[in-house]
Image 1 (cartoon, rainbow, N blue to C red):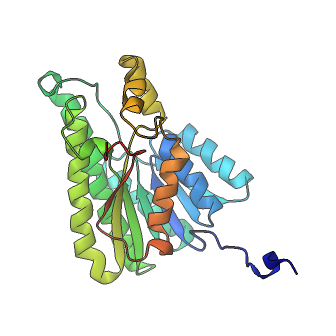
Image 2 (image 1 turned 90 degrees about the horizontal axis):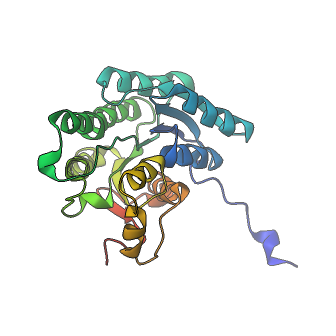
Image 3 (image 1 turned 45 degrees about the vertical axis):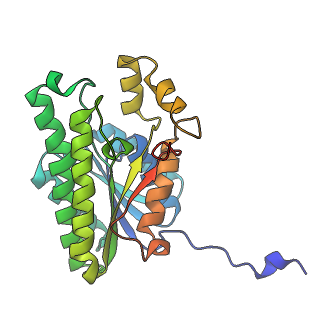
Length: 263
């Protein structure tokens, strides 16, 4: 008899969970929303651009997944809290959250960055992450009781970042928030981790390559795998960290960078 007869179908990685994803209109966030739904989660997509959110939501539903969306500006704390509340209103609970939304500023030396650009990247990438984490912890605590959060950091946060100094600084601060939250909420059964992607073929990276031609090739040359990631490859790492299969992992910043940090 074929041994496959005795192999049960594996349940989805996030089966039965309600997931909240920021930056879900495109790039890594959209890939994550699609993946989380395929892995059994009901997903609330959040981002600033409603037509992008609608398109990804409809795609997930057409494939048989459960998804809805909420317009959310990470620079506005009330907007962030309302989006998290929307997930609870729709699905009755919150189990996991992927704080992926971010912005970037023009690359260049620190002394050439404008104060307005610095303030903007702070408001979205750091303050927005803090506001989201606070709202998510409250929602998980009030509904599911236990759960997991993953923040998107960057390999550019792990060492000096002369090309994107403000971006790197905010992402390094996100690493600190991640570790602090893991220590604070671990006793309640809420895990908090971060991923640090390397070069990933998103609209943000393509725009950077347009403004600095050849930058992706330069980054790939410094990457042992000699290529950039597809957004879904980054989403896969987030899905695992959010799943029960990572039940003893918290407080980590996981490089998902093709070996760039090791080189």
